[in-house]
Length: 479
Image (cartoon, rainbow, N blue to C red):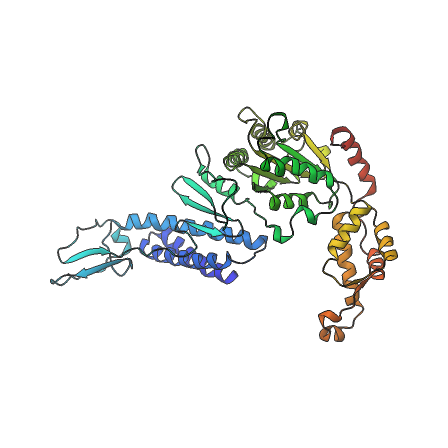
């Protein structure tokens, strides 16, 4: 991807420099070359699995390609006022008649700005090339990204979001986005936070051990109302806000990932960086844009991880911009302009629920405590981690491991399993490791786990658990 990025940006950068210097013909040539390189690169990399960093780079390519398209159209309109040259425009052919075409002298770019476009000479006929039919999977005005399972078409003042999956969409036709009252650049920034995950990646509720209360609450709020919307109305209407709180590493973000894969809703993954800006007033506009787009694309889930990072309790000495951001969030979440029947859920996750503002808590009527895994959950978590590994652990050793990991979080247990998996490798010499087959690697034993427990310790302080228990008894869902 780095080579494609360098090749495309080299032409785009030259186009920008030529554009700034007023050399329109050179800028047009570089922009066209950049568009061609971006199109091929996006088409090539959209068909493979990418990680988070590569996905962001792919989105950046789409933005750069759109910019090059816009500048190309503008420059083509402007240069049409100058004398056309067949050498500069490959899409135009000048077919000479019986009278030979008059030769023209080259005109520099700087002088061509003030030259009016002459009428067509009697010596030549202007015949545009027929536009070829587009057979590529990439649409003319947009780019298809299979990872997001949707096509974004930018045309004029509206953006159409269409389903590109092979099956028929079950949630109906997604409406065309209306930018009235919104900043298009801010809307594009918010749309970049759209996430689509597949069950085949292992992100589903079946891959999560424990957390039965949270699973049930999410199913009642998202899965079941989507199946039977006529039942979940009135008093049975699902809440607009769910707060997942508890010690770190217990599966709050994992539940959100599973929900994104299981549900058929539009899923926004929002962080503090997506809603904050150094420019005064832009943070509030981003919040307004987020909820506006979410309502247009409903049913929608807005997931905010570490929600305490910007929705903490309001104080007298607080920054004015931060206070306005919180106020705008609360108004858009549940204010005068909201409707009771809108299909919008804000899912928050935090390790510090006691730092949240009281008005924010009021907008999260369902607050679920994600606890440390119990005995059964720890056993299931370790089995999931060792699913594809060769093991030799008897029942006595297994019970000892499960009992002695009482204060381990789900993340700690996964790290413990990784450390135990390294133990058989450490027992082999470097020479042996170079020639040994994969099937000949010794299995993971109970002794390896006991040795790993000496290095991997719990990351959660048991004293801090009492704070979560007290807060849950006062404000949480204790069912």
